[in-house]
Image (cartoon, rainbow, N blue to C red; front, top):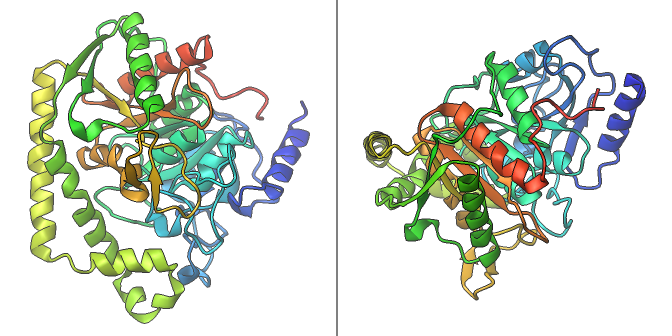
Length: 426
């Protein structure tokens, strides 16, 4: 297909997108440069600076924000690799929420069911990949903001290791937890993009026969949707069939670790927003204002204690799992599938009443606290709304977690995982 026709088709699909996933379309994107992502159209979450347009973060607080003077570091690296930035995408307001239905533009809609949330906060990025508009998107991930929408929309979402991709030019939610996230139409697409951003090479064909996959059995990781539990069981069986060793284990530290997340993210977010919150509280969406005001109650002692606990438990977990030869953890990405827009509570298939927002974050946030790379990949063998399988690397970094995820993706599709961006997107 002619490149200009393809580009025109992508731009029209962005303008006509029915899911409220787009906040700005670049009418005349840059010409493609040579590189590993040459000609690949990419969309960027509206927490991330793109030169020439404002970064409004889904909020009326930044309605009058000036145009960004330069690209964020991740955008500059994507352009250098040949990618073409075609749009900026919907975000949950200031990235402070996992549902994707709170923003000045209104909610983003899940392409699988427009009455349901796409997940957040990288809502528009996941929705556009899921809708087939673009093969690759950039988001952020502070407690799961890339992996949660990837799971709920049925795409691949990677949170690299802490500091693997620079955060320069990204509006912060919580600086010590924030990560750039990559969302794509396959493990190969995401792996190629990660390699281009970090000047590394991910070998998805690397054997996993020496890989030890840990399956936590603690109550913390249990889900109330039998379809999600069964999907993780199938993924474990598939990895074992591919040669990995799958071993059940306990993570007794997880409850104490997870409990400090709210203190850290709340205190850091409040520090960023307190002046605006005092002067212009009405410019925030009410749920965001309420979360920030509640976060203002954390003391300096609370925050310091939480960070000390984080360091202690992180070191203990890393050392213990390393001593047990665990390379990767296998868990669900979320304990629920996409919920109705605006729902605060839902009933699980087993009748349990679930608080939506904390549930969405629960299984992803530990890996932000730990800084380990983690990926969500669509689950094999499921019907209806998508389910995400999450793999987190204790050791071996992005290479091992993506190579393992590729096995799940290949077994799901019945064929080999791609190791290049989707063809025809040039």
